[in-house]
Length: 454
Image (cartoon, rainbow, N blue to C red; front, top):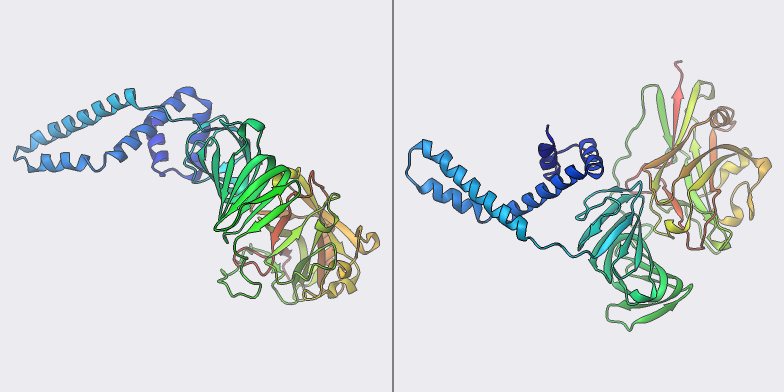
């Protein structure tokens, strides 16, 4: 297909994901194609706007009693009129006011945005929907807002935006004092500061002030002033732990010659611990959370997962892959954590497999001390990385060490510890999270085992 047809199909949503990605790349790289895209997009918009008027031309034509050979001429005349109107309007259409500029958007993935998403794009009023990565907008007022995926932001004016879902960090210089970020049930007004706002699907919002102060306005309540280090949670609580929710069947991702075992099978279990025994057991939580920090000791978190391999003969295992579905924790900010490295350790003491989801706390975590994992009770099996601002669908670990650890396990209960090695730049740095067996839709921690023929 030619460029005009590609553009038309793209605007109408009739390209595949790969074709749409290629068109976006071509448009960004070719100034002439960019100009053609802008003109075709505007033309589609004009025709959409005139869709109520155009049918009357067709009805008028159909009421005329004329030989059939006249009808193409009437259609041609109608097309000429529309073309003339469009040409005239192209000369007179007002330029949209620029509210902000997308100054950083490298390695981002977008879906459902109303506004341009190429780095350097000038933005009017509209919505940005970021699926993966981190993007920074500089508003005409001078305020900078960093959007952390997954997130949806509505740009309202040079002094105002609305966070529909996700997380943002705002840096507001003195000339932009009064810059406002709306979120569910709350309005955050800058008074000269750097602050973060999160919003989730349950209608909850959270505000944290990194430096300076903000004024927080809530429905039917007096405004509240927050200063450096202070935060506030607004909205309804998340669904109760024991509340029944619909759960999609767990997909069987087994491949030929492979078998999948999850923490939901048999005696399997998963949970995380947070430093300090004031934090209760998390065995029923839909997420297992991991964080490493030297800035706020009580925010340290480690995860533990146990797999029941009683039905798998050790000598038939040829290969092993651990897969974790990555989920948004809703805690902390990606902008405050660099690219992060995680390690997976196997617990070599068989007694450590007997931990309980209902009782596990920081002080009772297996093979653990306050400072880390016990070296002579654990074996390092592999690592994975998650880039700053990116939320991959899943991460995996496959190594010779992991295969041998599982093959030589004596009691057929395999317990793994998951820790983050990378620290953070601020105590409000991101908490990374993975789906547990209680997650309503995502896959629980899974071991894929390649089994040899009997």
